[in-house]
Image (cartoon, rainbow, N blue to C red; front, side, top):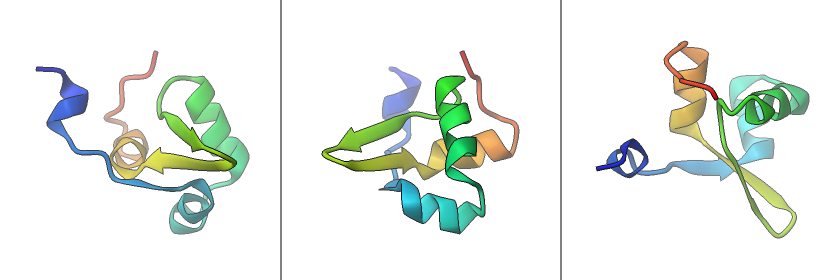
Length: 64
C-alpha cells in the first residue's frame, strides 16, 4: 500500500498555513519546488497538507 494512502490528507489553505506556521509564502513555494511538500490548487486557492508541513519542519520529509 502506498504511503500517501496510509495517512489521510489534512488540507488547509496556504494563507492559513502561512499564519499557522509563521512562514512566508516564498518559503512554502521553495519547499514545493524542492518536492518536500505538495501544493494543491482548486481554482485560485492553494492548499497544503499539514502532515507534510509537520514532517518537513521536523526533518522527517523525503524530498525529491
